[in-house]
Length: 432
Image 1 (cartoon, rainbow, N blue to C red):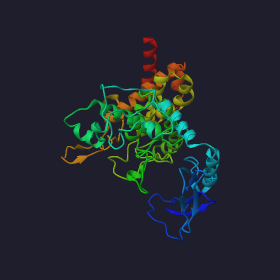
Image 2 (image 1 turned 90 degrees about the vertical axis):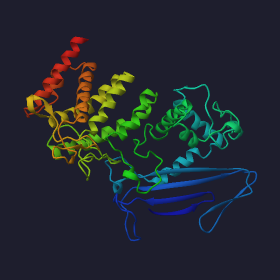
Image 3 (image 1 turned 180 degrees about the vertical axis):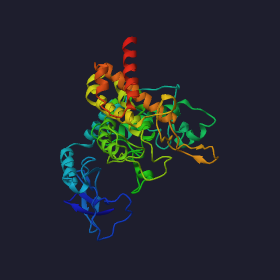
Image 4 (image 1 turned 30 degrees about the vertical axis):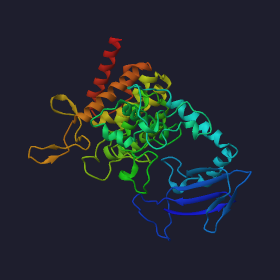
C-alpha cells in the first residue's frame, strides 16, 4: 500500500499510509491518489536510563546500544469513522490519535502495562473453566519453565510438568485420530474463547473471517463478514461461554445493516423493513453480491443474525436491551419477511426464489441446480424470527393489535402472516 515512514525524535518510527479507494486495486502507481482509509502505526522505543543509547541511522532505523532492557510500544489507528462516512470525508487523524494514545501510556512501566492487560483479559477468560481430564499435556518449547521465570511478576497460571513430557500442539492434533485426548478438547475450547475475547470487544469492529489476524493485503474472501454462517458461528459461544460483552460489536453491526438494508429492501424488492444478503463487509453492505445464486442471492443473512438478539435476551433477561435494541431490529426484519413471503399452493406462505447457501441439488432434468422455493434454511429462520418477535412483544407488554398494526401493508398476501403472528401471540398468552 502507498506509505512512507520516518523517525520522530530519538525513539520513534512512524509509518503513515493510505488504502486504495477500490477494493480490487492490487497496487498503486506513484501518480495515483488513494481515496481509501488512512492509517498510521508508531513504534516507540524505551531503554534503561542507567545505561543504554538509542541511535538513529540514515535509513530511518533505530539502533539500541549497551542497554540492559528495551520496551517496544506499538500503537496504530486509522481514519475509519463508521460504515456511513466515506474515507475521503473522514475528519479523523490517525497520526494524532496514535500519538495521543502513546502519551497516555508513556509513563507506565512494563509491569503496569502487563498487569493492566492481565486484569483486562483474565476478568473475562477466568469466568469459565472446563476440566475433562485429570491432567493436561504441555506445549513444546519452553513449556517446562514456569511463567514467573520469564514474567516480571507471579501469575496464577503456570505450565506444569517437565521437559520430558512436553508434547507439541501439532503432535497432539495428529495423535487425536487414535487418542482422543480430552485435554486437547479443553485447549481448543479455551482457544475459541481467547479468539473472541481478543477480537471482539465493546467499541471494536465485529469479528470477520480472519478476525484481527489477517496478514494479507487481499485476504481470502476479502476478510469480510459472511452472513450465511460464518459471522453467526463466531458468536455462538459468546453467551454459553460467559462472554456476553463480546457480543456488543455484533449488535452495533446489525444496527448498521438495518440502515443499509432498508435501502436494499426498498430498491431491490419494493419491500418494507430491512434485509441483508450473504456477503457483507466493513461498510455494512446488504445488497446481493456479484456471483452465483448458489451463494450470492440469499436474503436471509440479516434474519439469521436477528436470532442472536432474542438469544441474548433469554440469557441476560435484560428488558431494556430487548425494548430499545432488539425489538426495533426484529420488527424491521419481520416487516421485510412479511413482504418477502408469498402465498403458495394450498394457502401456505413460501419464499420464492429460494436457495440453501452453498448447497445444490439435482433438478428433474438431471442437472445440478441451486434455486428452488421454500428451502428448509429459509423457512426455519423465518419461523424462528416470527417466534422471537411474538415472544419479545409479550415480554415488553405489547398487545397483539399493536404488533399487527406496526406492520402496515397494502399487500393482501401479508394478511396470512399477520394472522399467524396474532394467533401465535394469543396462543402463548393462553399458555402463560
